[in-house]
Image (tube, rainbow, N blue to C red; front, top):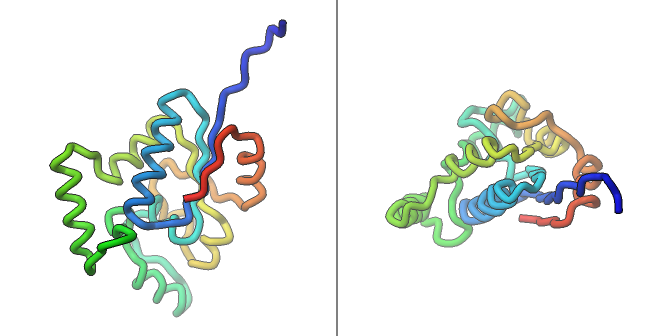
Length: 162
């Protein structure tokens, strides 16, 4: 029998969607795993970057600024993947969830940080979308590439793509 301690179980998750319902799922799973003692890595790419972004303008070039305006905002601007109704769906689901004491997305994200979930922005997506590291909330780690995520994922017991 070995004197070594058992290795901490881990989960690696790609968050590509910025849809409200998918972000709820991602953060509920991440906080649940972290609360169970797992090491959790969340890799935010493309539209998923909204989940870790502050409500600030981004973009340096014309296209970057246009993208920043069209997809601007932070996690509180995330719309449901179905029944968005031009923002009305976000308000409606917010009311319904509040009536059932469901935490807000921003609260779940803050809980994930408090529980030690490791959140990383995808460097390539940040470059393409012209979102600098300074546009992210406190608690987000320095950006990484896909190779870093793959190393985490290949050793993880659970891998998810949301």
